[in-house]
Length: 75
Image (cartoon, rainbow, N blue to C red; front, side):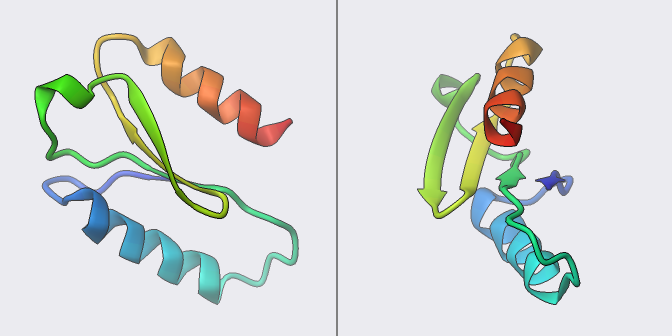
């Protein structure tokens, strides 16, 4: 699940993603990737594992980095 909420911090977006995942009827394992809009410039194009199947991705100038993360998680 990829979540991006305009104007929200990583913590705020994680809360929403966790709520959606908790209320889901899907019985399989679903990774959660959040893309906060507010972050420091030096974090661009980085990913941080913040929990079991939970990632924060800071989008920058290299969109292939996000595609690579999503491909690894779906394998």
